[in-house]
Structures are given as structure tokens and as C-alpha cells.
Length: 226
Image (cartoon, rainbow, N blue to C red; front, side):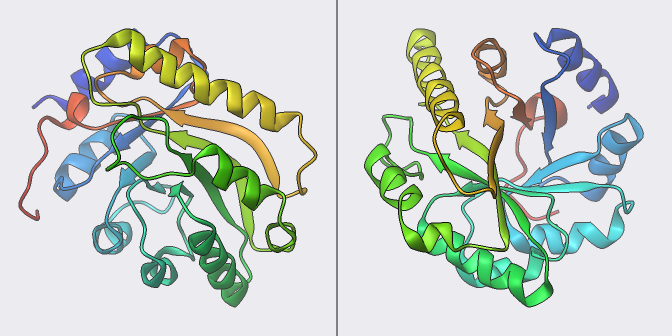
């Protein structure tokens, strides 16, 4: 597996030079992360807190860690001091706990709100009604240790490219709509995290600012712990 060559090929295929590449390194051994780092990658995505905890001390200090998986409330405290961005905030309960843990260490933690855009019920995220209820609540307005920097979404796993494009386009429209709403100062709507190995080019065409790419860089997922 030539990680450096894979990264070069991916970057050459990008539609936008401003779109950020998150290398999804979940299940991958430290050597693979180090190879990607040597090739210029600084942003790594993991979906398990325990794995971030294991890898973080072994990587250079300027590595930026992105929590991209479903996050359990009781695990936030372990990554709160250093996580660069939590992509998958899918409930107000989780956001409240992130705020609580941020307060304990006096650090405002950057997050994205995960929106349910796919047809699969198994995927996480806010629907429109839940999002509106949260954004207009006084509890939300009183948060002090989170920075809501934008939205994240996962398209349906399908070969129907028109459906994928439509889902991404809808998320982009919501992203733009929220920019024009009167929201608390800790909400900035600057990042739109959508697109993975199979659909990142469509996501970029539809306005993604961050794509989460794993298998196209590192090869197929390892299902055993490294």
C-alpha cells in the first residue's frame, strides 16, 4: 500500500483546493498514520475514543484529531483536552455533556452538528424538527464551552449518484440557511463535512469544506485492532 501515492492521486482529483482532507485512520496501525503524516497529512479521523487515546501520544504534537464516529457521552472526557473537532454531535444531550466537560477544563470544544440526510434509519443525526427545537431553545443559547462550527452528514450508501448529490445539496442548503439565521455567537457555520472515499468528488461539487477519506488512502478497513 503506497500511502503517499494514494494521497497524491486523491489531492490531484480534488475539485477545490480549499476543501480539507481528513485521513480516516480508524483501525489502521500507527505506521500508516506516520506514513500519511510524512506525506503532509495533519488531520486524522478516528471513530473510537480508545483508539484516539492510544494513538495521540505516539503522533507529533501538531497532529489534529477528528472524532468522526458516534460518540458516547461518558467517553467525552478522555478526548476533551485535545480533540480538534467532533464531527458527529447528533443529540442535544451529547452537546450538553461536551459543554460540561469543556467547562471542567476551561476549553471551548469545536463541534459539528450531524444531520440525518440518508434514507437509512441506521445512520445518526438531527432531523429538521429536532434541529429547530434545539437551536431555538434557551438551554442551547446558554452553552458556553462549545463552538458549533458547522454541519456534518453522511449520504445514503447507494450507487444512485443522483440521490447522493441530492442529499448533499440539501445539506448544503441547510448550511447556507443557518448562516442567515440569528443564532448564538458560538455558532459560526464555516465547515461542512460531507463526502467519503466513494462520494467525495460529488460532495466537493456540492460545497463540502471537509471530506473524510479512509480506504482510498489506507486500503480496506482492518477489523482487528492494530
